[in-house]
Image (cartoon, rainbow, N blue to C red; front, side, top):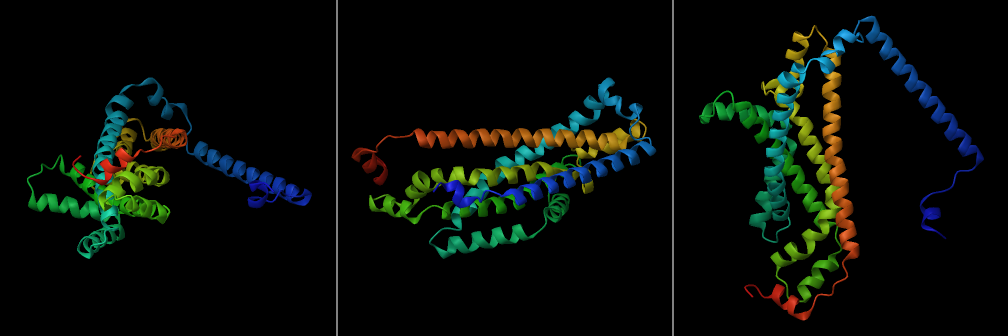
Length: 294
């Protein structure tokens, strides 16, 4: 019996007809909704060429509004990723510590910041930078956005790391300890390398969330990110709000698709590397791992 027959029952004639009927009904419903949306936009003159022309004929729409906003979005997202990833990994590993005085504070910090909406963290950070630091008003929105994204996403990434490590069979760590490896060596050389592949899809999903959540700073903090460029651009080009939002949405889709595609390529490369590795660890290598300083 194949694994496919165990996990999936081949539909019979009635099930096939029902699936075809449901597919047709769904496609017709989607077509009707799209037709209604197009008609509504056409009645309000939102599909006229004059509203879409700036994105094709006027380079200032990109150089003045879209590209600077995209640059700020990438800066905020990149800084947040670079800081949140190692911080989240550190907190996730700390939650697995056998010492309560390490595990307890790490768990409290993670649960606290994970429970607070990221927008509130941004607002608190903005107020804190205004009251207690000398950060200039022009740079303050970027600092607040990055701080809020780091605090929230590091706590979520910590749970991803903890769950990824706990998903490994217990025999992995038991075998490593049996050959004399210390706890930190087990974590660095055995558990983390094996859990990275399992954690990668969830980590990438959280990175996509970071990219999209930069728009919150533009909505309430005046951060000049990609979505915030819609208002001045629409005012300058004759109330082409729908066209501006559509172009910005396409840019976000392309950006996040590139991120997920890179992650899929990296995950496949890691999996192929693990399958192709057939080296046997010798006694000298084991002794070197088990005995620090050699």
